[in-house]
Image (cartoon, rainbow, N blue to C red; front, side, top):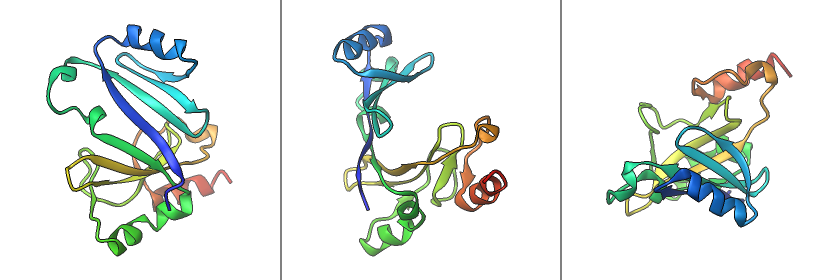
Length: 154
């Protein structure tokens, strides 16, 4: 099921300082917004997320307690059955009420979440091909919704 690391996260005090450091290490910037930057570890396969903010000094910050594992799309479709077979319970992501895998078209990925015994957030995630016509969608879609919508552009 798990093919490799998709992403890891670190909290940072100053995003600009940290960006300069990770660039100096030879990592290539993949994406950035106001308080977050992602650098490729293996381009197109795995990245490191840097998160600036006051949360840096609190005992809990999601970036300290989250790892995403890369899986194939077909495996993600079967992920809830696989998790149940190993007695691991999926959990909703953010404000979602369902544990069903979902797609983020604007990010080009799909995922499902669960926790380890210590409450660390874990994720199974895969890359998906997103037609340019659908890249603007910021809503999270179920796999069924995604397959119907993307099938129109296949």
